[in-house]
Structure formats: C-alpha cells, structure tokens
Image (cartoon, rainbow, N blue to C red):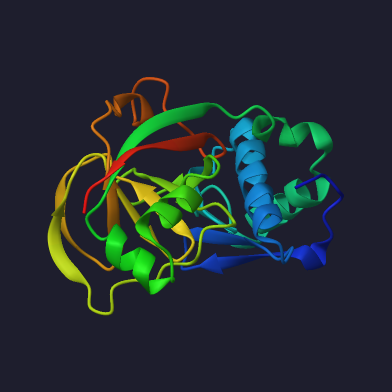
Length: 227
C-alpha cells in the first residue's frame, strides 16, 4: 500500500436512490482499494459537511448517506471526486500506526471440517490462521470486526446450506478469506463457519472503551484445539 495521485478512471461515484452515494475504488488491488476508500472516509469526516448524514466504509466501497435538501447527488459526487483526486500522502497517516489487540483463542467446533476441506490438519490450519495479525477491514452489521485472513491461509467455503443458530460473544468465524470476531449474542441465519472461541473481555473492541477501528490489528493467539 502506498501513496500516488488517484486518477478519475481509478474510482467511480454513483447515486443509490435519492439520498445515497456509493464510492467504489477501482485500483484493482485489494489492499489499495481498501486504503483509498477508508482514507476518503477520514478526509470527508474531517470536512464536517452538513449535507452528509452518515458514512460506512467497507472493503472497496464507501456508502454515503446525505440530506437531499442540503446537497444534490451531482454536487456531492463532485466533492467526493475532488477528495479522491486531491488525497496527499499526509491523508494516509491514520493507517500508519495501527494498534494491535492480542486475543487468546481456543480452536474447535468446525475447524476440523474446515481444515479437512482445504487439505490440512487442524493444527496446520490454525498455524496459518494465526501466522500474522489480522487487519480490521470494517465493522459488520452487529458491530463485529471484519478481518482479512493472512495471505497464507486458504480460502474457506461457506456452508452449502446456511443454519439458524444463536451467535455467542467471542466466537471466531471464517468464510472465504475473511474472519469475524463476535461481540454480541443474537439469533440469525449464517453460512459462516465457526472455528474458535475466546473468553477474553472484548468490551474494549466495541462501541465503548478504546474501540478498535478499521486499520487496527487483531492477533489471535491459539491456546488449544478441541476435537
């Protein structure tokens, strides 16, 4: 990931309905796309535009909710375009000093099946899953940190048929090249694979306390594997 001037062909900004804009980075590199939309998010936050109601930055998209009585889509899209083309090296400073949170994890549950599906022993899969800290890319619908797995960790297929179950605080799930760390209990339908659990106090990762942010790192420390 690094700084260079962003050309107009490297992103698009399009209306969604009558009160949303979507910024999409088209760098073609997963890390660069993520960095750009989150840097645009930080820059727009600093501008404190009264027309913007809320923003949500994800993997390569930034969703902007705005007040149509204060700005129209084309005007706001032009502002977003100026932000993207005007980003300078200092605007990326927010990503240079991430905090790292160590989380002890007991692996088990579906980790045996997941490991077998990718041709590894459970121990080998856990070693790859914990081979480096996982960067928080964004927050999920329940506020949970959404994490990018280490590059060496194989992609994990979702369940062929989603299940309805109650999620637990502290559970670690995987799907594709992502992991999530549950911060709240709740009943729901999921195709993600539960592979671990932590008993650590996670309040500092939520809406209160120090609140881990996109760009920060979570290091899973394996303390055992339950068959």
